[in-house]
Length: 175
Image (cartoon, rainbow, N blue to C red; front, side, top):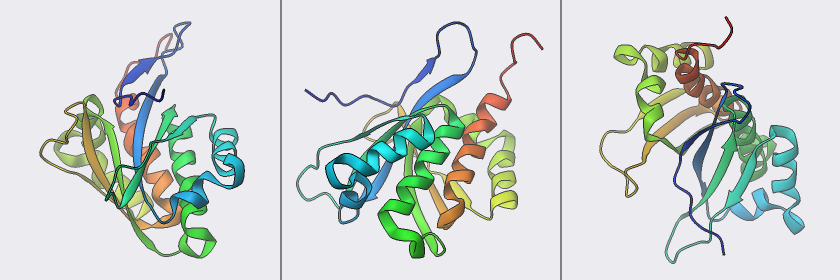
């Protein structure tokens, strides 16, 4: 069956040095059908445009949102988030302000924030999106909650920048 995978960091084979990660995005339950699409067409579109794996978790009772897991490289994850937002809320919703909750691997938290919050500030200055790394534990201690608030069309870019704050601090092989 479908296993729940915790958000983890996995290095690609062949020593490429690029980190793949799984990010969970909470999509309102009323909007998830539009993300999935007819016969899975929406998910297929997200996969093709982002080069990421996407998986929608089953809905537990009384949940207001469904979890969409996106696995791939940070730029692809940001692209997939952008696509999911467009599908969930339509083009009109892409221009308004939105708040999206994302679950990131715990070991990305420090770099997403940056030293004294420098990366969060940089993301806000460049994209206009306020990224908040929530304190406290999630039910799964392997993850941290990140809240993105701002223009819906820029949330994917903000997530990519926040995640790349992590890999930008990593040494690049062969340089």
